Image (tube, each protein chain N blue to C red):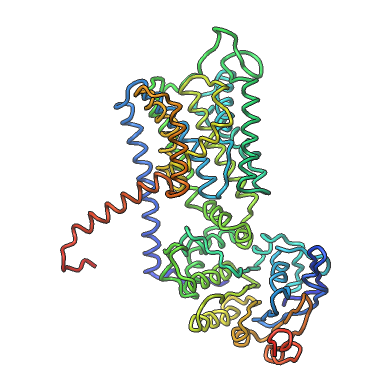
Length: 234
Length: 353
């Protein structure tokens, strides 16, 4: 469970997140909001890339904010970025291995663990291909494979489906839905694609101007008048 | 997590084949260097043997500069100053404590490695032009220092400076007292250093450096301790330079402080780019360009300083059209030729898959 308590993030005179308190309990949660709502800032807070002015964050009862970004990764927090971060001159295998060997002691079933996530994400066939030689969907799946390797506890996926087509998005949805069953990790999915959120997330948080607009079961939240007015424009 | 099933047979097979290819390329590099180490002393005259010793020593230092730029995208313009640090340490230990040559080389590498780590500290906060300027200032500082101190030449005191005719040369290793033997020895050190660098590039540090080069945020998100791995890279690059400095000192017997100007570090970096920073062949080419091209021009009665103009033109060429340097162009050429030769063996109308 991600427990955010009274978190405020301020950049100069701008409050990017303003006294946010929310509990995210479901295996796959969504985070939506219009541009500038503070979605990526919240992900940055959770992953240690942005500092809070006040408040605290507990994950499964453990305080997160005292940990450095690297310590959070070793603890089990994973994130992907809006722009995929595949290393082009490493193979797909080495891209995953590069993360695994930073978070776990070497050698212990290392190859099996990398092979396992590549099989789950359907990247086995391109395991030896260079990052530069795989297509956008494979790159997106590689980002998911990197997030899954090495006993993750929480996955923060920032627009994991950006730029892919309908058919590919459906496959990605299936993969994201299977994460909790696969490894027990909780997923926080940030995306503009309401269909993706609707079909994958059972609980959704909506931010607007850094404040909590709504939180609850996804369908209820998406139908709430204030959400339709602020985010969906209807 | 419970025990995972073993890798699928076809994936395991493909992985083994990639590992075999990587290992084969490492052995190819070592074989080429060993062959050069054995053949060059037999082919070259006295003048060229000395030039090639110097080129091998400089190539050893270039391997560090190429590592920083090729693996991390960091421009360090104090690599030649680190050659000087290594040279000074080796000379001082050899004259003052009479350590065996190999120990002097290792100590030179360690001293330059420590200095390199200090030089790399600004890289934690700055990149690109700013890092280049800061490291260039360090090279300038070293130029002033070494001009005032000079290199040890067998004298007394902490600086080890001798007066007049009391100057002595650094003792070479017993196995390589002749110039030809010393060229083989220098090439073997170059092979060892390139082997060390290549091993780093293909293992955990190399993958961490690749993530840092992709972006600091990507590296942090992958759990890479950026401070540790950048410092490691600067330390390794410094070690390469220090070993190169000791080999250079052993080749000439003594070093001249006037040869360690800041501009030499700029030239070393520029020719690393011209040679090619992504492949060991580029390192060899950079060493040859720095030492053999001026010697070649002198051989033909042309002023060796003209080489600087050629180098400038080559750098513009490399930066605009050949970012993998001369080595990249040669390797592409070899690959195209081999492809064409393989293609010529294909009988028309017959499938070869």
